Amino acid sequence: MTQLLTPEGERIASPQFDRYISDIDPDALRGLYRDMVLVRRADREANAMQRQGQLGIWVPLLGQEAAQVGSGRALRPQDMAFPSYREHGVAYTRGVDFKELLGIFRCTDHGGWDFQAHGFHPYTIVIGNQVLNAAGYAMGQKFEGKVGDDDGEATIVYFGDGATSQGDVHEGFVWAAVYDAPLVFFCQNNQWAISEPTERQSRLPLYQRARGYGFPGIRVDGNDVLACLAVTRWALEECRHGNGPVLIEAFTYRMDAHTTTDDPTRYRLSEELEVWKHKDPIERVRVHLARNGYADQAWFDQIQAEADAFATDLREFCFNMPEPPPERVFANVYAESSPVLDSQRDEFLSYLAGFVEAGER
Image (cartoon, rainbow, N blue to C red; front, side, top):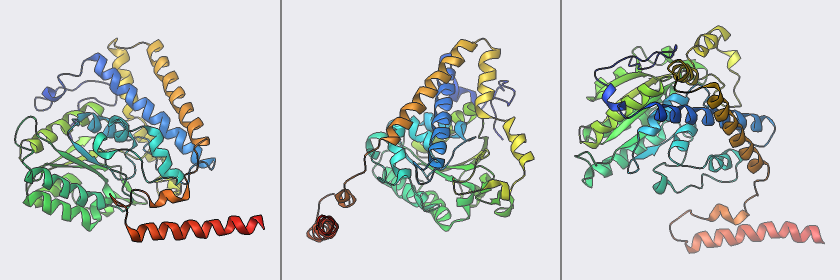
């Protein structure tokens, strides 16, 4: 397993991957730390708001900040990311306003950001379906000649260990391999597919599955933001140069429930969680910064205050989020409206108006 920063905050040299993070000076490392702190604080606030009835559901990312921030920061503007439903950290690194995510879980919209401008597709709820979408998009990049040099394009798709048991994922592997698509398969192995452990899904480590499809696979410490950044940069470089797909297994841990409808105490031991707390992705960077004199307590306090303000802003927005008009459900269904859709919209609005008229009488 590739690791560049231990849980104790010690830097490990890597002849293969050090060159991919040669630009990460103390200032850049502080930036990665800030990213993870803000993302975690926003995640905790959204989790609390769901418990208070402000969101219909929330999908926590607690413990997976390094995998998401590290891989997200490896992407270039011309690259495209396909998320599942937990990639809030990747969305943040792609410039998507965290407030845009709240509408999905408050059930007021399906994701209102411009996915082409941000290079970040809408969330996918159907397990593994985004892998097929990403494979098709990456094949298009290959067909249009957008790969082959340092300035080439690449695609990354995110999914969990549970999704590797879905047919869509394996079909994506086949198509990407056959067409040498510039696609990075980024599997966040957080050890639990809802209530089933990884060992119930595969006899081999997940990254080794890539061998059966004829492309490289690698396992990285998913709680190590430097390793995730370096390995993803390497994989994207392979793809943008036309060398075909790569599978990354980010070995991490889901430290909260699968979603807010889940109770993990029913299927996993508290001792397991305690072990992984010592591998916390944020803490190891904090220790490294402090030990090497790259940051003092005043700076850490400043970042925490910034994160708290970030969360407060999210809360105020969520509590005051306007309800969308009913006709919005018919907007953006197609690039251009159609008589059939217009008729359905008019009929629906007329139906709703009937309740208003009945109430007035």
